[in-house]
Length: 506
Image 1: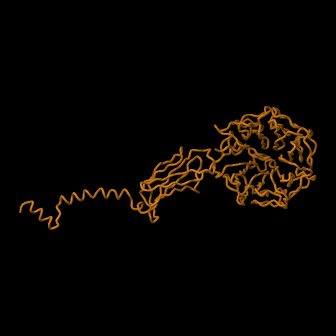
Image 2 (image 1 turned 90 degrees about the vertical axis):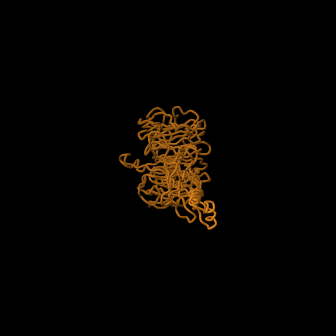
């Protein structure tokens, strides 16, 4: 047979030549390759997901973000390449990875936006060759500046931990006056967030962190059981929260009845202040006493009263709220250690309680007043008042500031260390001031352009100007982070040795 006839015979009998087999094998390779590059798990409903601890990411700083690849049966898939992406400016290290035996690969994310609004959202994306996903994460951050005790000597952003913008903050120092050395006292802090929660950190020997324990804590955490809070206050070792319904919660030290619950038993968690017959609109605390204004313009007070600071005409400690004598039409309240102040709607000021160093501003250093009396030099034109340890301050309608009382470290800001029994001008602050605040022996002002000035004691850096000078006798500029403006000064407390300012958010 010829070769052609042999080939025809093989084809007829179903035999295939070796060359034909090799060609068929070569042609099948691309088909197999396509199947490998398109895994069966993706074609049949596989997925990729993203996660981070608590589904939150800090505004700046590294946080682990994990991608998980699963097949259609929700089983992890190993060996899959995943790439990561996010908002402009965000960085990933590494930018891509390969899933392990548990179907996971992890990268370190840094959003790189330290001033992002706490509670805002950041969208991250993970992509494989066959699937992709995008997920929104809550940004935790801080719009709070701090300097002084427990912080640096220059104002800087606090820890990026808050899931909502800070609206107010208080620094306090437990036992600042009681112990022989202030260095043995312990700082603690409260922060009020826009979501109505209260966060705390610091010393907790008396339960002032409100977490049910007496264990100190160096990190911020929410005060359990508090929601709908509109205002906070802090005494020496006690915390207070005003709720949106006009009621008040208190916790911590209660040796003088300063929690207002009808007893002197300490409380490790927030409890309701008793006997409030009117809706409370403002609350402020001195060293061991509290003053609160009601919606009808009247005042109530409770706590330690040995120096008449409660203002009911007596010197008897009050374990529950009592009316402050003879005051109506109150616009704002303030306290010093053992003294109280009220700004009336007509722009005049009243004071009562301890008059050490002339802190009542009545022109003398005579003994305490157990009922409110007028401050003669402030008969009109006052728009805000503030109290420190044994000093007090008034902001006038023309934007200038007055101060009086103790001045041993220059806290009156007049260039001297001489105590003053009547209000006098603070040097250089003749106009443009929109808010005042005071700690123990340091005072602060906010100007209309969003800048700050401070003066007084600076041994802990609480002036915030970056120096270690023991005192500043006149106001100095407080350098702010580039491009940032202060929205409001924090409330502080009469025992504060830390500067706090709430910043504008984007």
